[in-house]
Length: 226
Image (cartoon, rainbow, N blue to C red; front, side):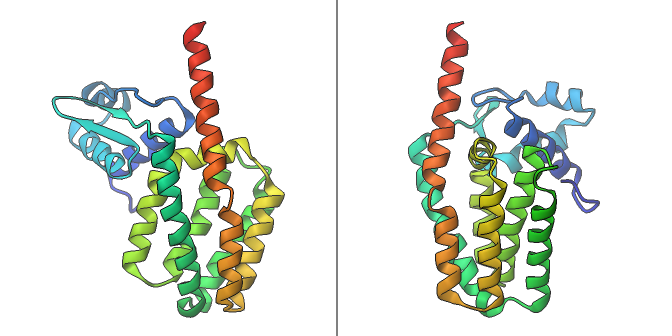
């Protein structure tokens, strides 16, 4: 969601990111800088910067002298990234047990309550983005800039794959229940409990994402045959 502080390039990147998540811009689709800028009513300079932002996130692949394309990572690449993200999430939670302020914990709880209260009323993408805000806020509560930056980078790289998985497994009870356990462990400053809670929450993530990507590829193949 855009904020007043977002630059024009960041606002454009947010719109393109949503188009990628929704599948309006599917994997391997070219993003023609001039045409896309004209369609969005912006100049090519912020469009170029927006594409660079998405390239850094791994959502777009830049190509010399050719239009960039929407990334199509292999399942092996995604699984490797999930392993790193799981480790970063557990480290974030452990450090947050020690470093989080009461304000941090109150903000994490506010996100949790918002998810619990509105999950079923939100669209799949809005619910997903709110869920990711919960995880990002925990990483910020660790008060380790290098960790927060690295976590945010991997979160962005897995954004689309995780969205596809979350859309397939739109399970409010599971998400809210797991978040509640994580929150209570953080409140108790219980490092062992929060590590287990995060591990349990993300245990099936790699398999869920792989299943979502395989289903998407199968659907694309079927469409090509018709």
